Length: 402
Ligand code: C5P
Image (tube, rainbow, N blue to C red; front, side, top):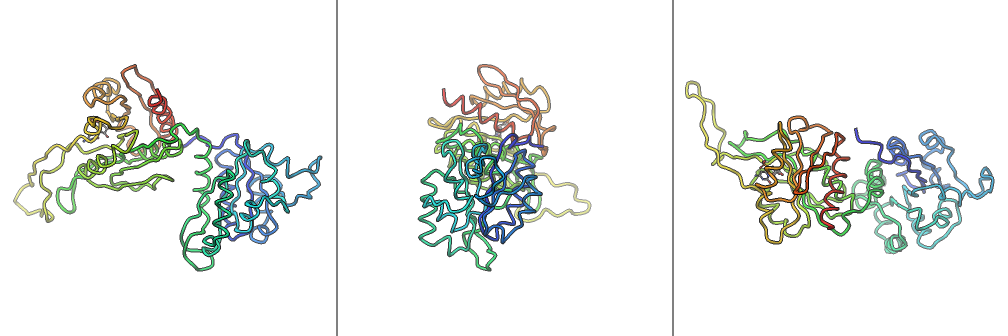
């Protein structure tokens, strides 16, 4: 289980009017679950879509709806609310609310507190939600560009089915995507301006059209590395073998099946990246020729024989490029992790090998890593894979900086 990722963060969650207000209820629940405290602020229009009672129950705090709320001693809700906040998140942000932000208007509490916040200390994140024609309108596009230029982070919108029955851009991101985006926002941008290529998952080597050789790698560690690198501000390409995992936000994914396909995809991309992290469990061998048709079981004819040939070593090939990326290999061992990792460091000629116990971690949500390089060994103790991936990203960032 991933550690509380928003522990100690205080979020002002603003709702402006829109049917996507129902997603703000789930977002509140997820933020609280991630360890944040949440102060909900609603516009009059938002209250037409969801009750303040619901938002109060989920946030465990009285919802604030008016700049004339006399409860604060100084009667200045619009100032007090953001002074203690780590961020203001407006979800949903309606077309009208974006227009207000763009103009710096302050005729109700939510726009007023956005304007009154300390711009360098309390970031503003907005999740637009509206009909696709409203989103595409030049006025809205102008407003959202202005709001972004003024420093707000714009999350989404996504494309898809809309409550009005139309299909297009303007759906608010899902609550889980918004929560993850906020978690990512708070991560240190250690890889800003860098490009990172990650290989992940197993490969599948066909024997015939229905059978093949593969392994138990789930891809979870590699996907966590891709997510952590993207959170750290890198532009990330993920070359994934056959796994059923969702693509992390802001990561470009290339799906492959066999080791040779993974080799071709990685080699085509490698020179354009600053870092290559090879987490994939690439099959060492493949059948020389996959049978074109299913090999039939025939009584009395014994078992089929097929010969294997070695697959290309993707990591070694990238490490051998004259102007290639900084290479990080993984060593999934069943014993003697450090000795095997160190041997791999020399054999593959890479600057960093990350050792782990393969059988103990394949398919699991947690792991323990051993970082082995020319200078020595460092253990990253048992934790969930995302926490370890963030630590590994920090180690890589420190190494490529020097
Ligand atoms: O010992 P092994 O060759 O399996 O080393 C594992 C490391 O090498 C991992 O980083 C893995 O992704 C990479 N590798 C590769 N291509 C192969 C075999 C392993 O990139 N054919």
